[in-house]
Image 1: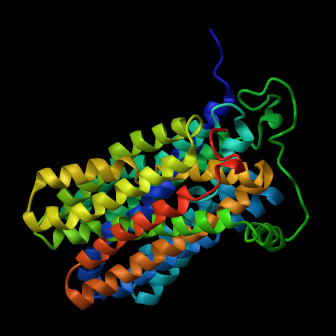
Image 2: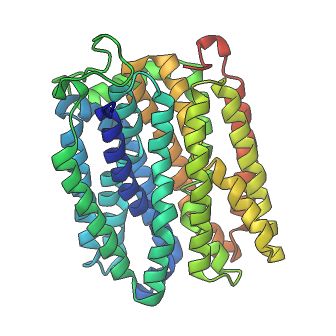
Length: 418
């Protein structure tokens, strides 16, 4: 029987670690109301901590990519997972809003950064020559898988017991992931005497670049080159809207928005999880398609359909229609993070294999800047109008703007299939 290539084992290991980091980050949405009830904190202040976390993990991405070049991917993954575990453990000790900002804003933001920003393209570039788009799609979809499986469980635990038990469960999963990484994760194909999947000769294409340079110099040098290209600004602008309309708005405020219309928190979290089912399918399919279809048109349709779905959501809630909510969940879920594989492909094709990881890190920083704006802005809009409706309508309109950004990228740059 043909032996399974170790690249696929690494993919499974990294898939699980991203699930853990993803559920840690996305769980903040189900903690907003319990934190309000237990500590008496204002929603805008809780939203501020979440916004800081989203921004920190985004802006850290390019530096994480640079540090990986210096200390190696395995050490960086262990360090990041250990940071996540520390943040979760400190959660049991917090009592002031500045504790929340420090723990969930900074520590957990830093701990999740590597897993949720540049890790997918790093693993795809290092371990795969063939099926890179598919590998990125699978790894990107893993954030949705964690949400799919665990968000309703966390909501049930919080509803049945309290939020401390939910945090303890995430901490346990983080410890399991740390152990798996320690014993099974490998630095590179060369470290175990093999080649990347699909490589027929040793071109050393995926060799890690060790450098004694300061990671800040590496990251900002790449940024200095990227900002000269119009395509960088178009991708960063579209990804700003992507972050604003996904993790910043839906990931942070969807559950609270639904609860405001009398929907039970477990039901709202389950609806978010339902989106995760379709996102798992949609993002994996997007990775497969990004190896075959013009990536600009993929992004155009992803942003356009997302805009339509976000305009549908307020109408569905005001009508009290679960049928429309299910339709929203299907269409929105299918392209929640389906934008990632084609965006990574475009970045790789424009800037080259080695530089693309760090430059994508900067593009993803724009994604998280948008997420931070939506997370904090959504809380402000709720306090001002006692509703999130204006926030969701505004996000829908911006998605149509983003669809225009990506379609004007010139195809002759080599942006079609890999």
